[in-house]
Amino acid sequence: MADHDDEQRQDAAEREREEQRYAAALDTAERLLGMRLEQFLDRGPGEPANGADFKRLATVHTFGDSWPRTGVLDTRTRALVSVTIAATLGTLEPLRGQLRIALNSGVTPEEIVEVFVHLEAYAGAARAFDSYRIALQVFAERAQADGGRGVG
Image 1 (cartoon, rainbow, N blue to C red):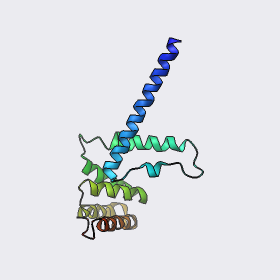
Image 2: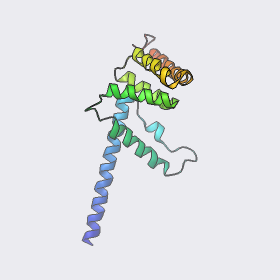
Image 3: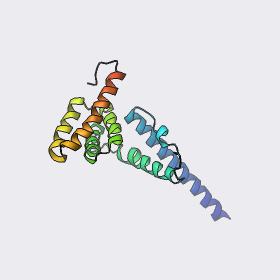
Image 4: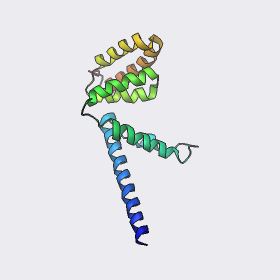
């Protein structure tokens, strides 16, 4: 009986640690993105129940494990790397988020444009232009939010 109680306490403690990690990851995402992620994490129509597991694991790994590692790469540098990866892969919606993180982390629009100049040389014009269209949308979104003053 005592072993069973100990096991239940350990399970409860582990669940609590996981909840704390998830909450911290969501807080990091909000700090970087400037918005809460919960709106994107709700269960969608027809989504299997284990979809929540995937989203939780991805959120904890990305915003709980990877982004906080600022000892070698600071957040600003990590943001530029992330923009480059998303643009190169052509993952346009994640790119939108990476661009917001970069701008929120002090990366200038001019630096982002230079990423696309370099990207074009190595990944090709078609990929660079597709991704650059998303950057232009994010720049316009930021300019509108700033009352038309622009991003930089």
